[in-house]
Length: 415
Ligand code: NIG
Ligand code: FE
Image (cartoon, rainbow, N blue to C red; front, top):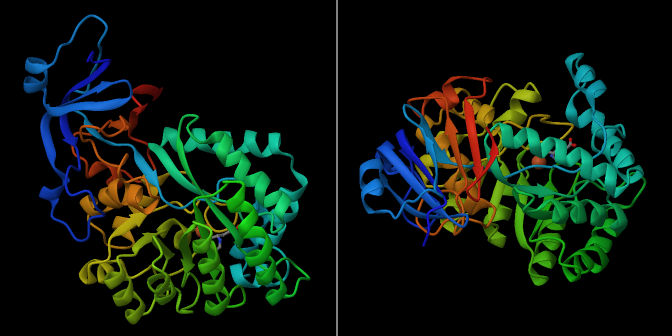
């Protein structure tokens, strides 16, 4: 089969080749780094990975093969952002200032601002507006090295707007980033609504309808003090499961409400945030194989003084993924590379652990691990060439993009 593209001479080709499963705890050697590495692509898929010399020797290259010289540079799989709230209207820039003056995220939400502010704007926006804004943010993500992401609804809290958000995601999926869509109707109780009646509506009407229309793969809940209780959250997630939506949870973000245990109990694909998660919850997650999605950018953006207990999770054998949590309220940041910096400096992950979390484990956390997240034969040719001669520079060079070229399905997306 003709080779369309060959990336060669990479100083470090970080392939992440390994078991077809999320990785828990690891040594740097498990990154499977190939020195003077090369990767060959045909029709958007990886057909060979190895040393440049070996690939040049064995591959049928001809004049049609585009060759990219990555001499002196690092090549990794495209980053996978496993938690975003991509589709919304407007910003909350005033709220950012209010928090600087002492108001907390929870107080602003309880006073009818926060998520409710974005809900009002998103309800008023049509699909074309939402699409244009989301596209702009996706462009920014891609320039920072993200090639796939999970994205949620949750700024409608009514069927029409939630479905509009999910339809926007469906339209954007594969254009060219891969997007795994999540129904997050349980992001907040609409203002003025009775919580139990809203949960009833979610379970009896919204979830079945979203599933019937095929708009989501996952169902998520903001299980938090003053938002949804663990009992309500469990009912919502189990209803989702009955409609083939895999569960994931906003768990223990601001308080320990038993979110980690809930995620383990329902067999969630991931539990996200976990800032205040209990030891027992983490032990249960490890036993149930739930991936922890860490969102350290959120704690930084909210000015919190602590982070999720990442080292403890690693000790317990919980696989870690990383996400930006990109949203207008708690983390207005599209750069997963910057979040990798925070993972190292704030959560004490090694650069190797951060890279695993932002690639192969992220891919498993969004249900795309079989297709994405490592540079292995048969996988999609999503890769990033970095202006760096050591992969550890990616998180080390904080806030400066080292991305030189992004390839999506073997096509140059950004250079
Ligand atoms: O993950 N916690 C709930 N949802 C988001 C914030 C959404 C918003 O503030 O608009 C989060 O932090
Ligand atoms: Fe979130």
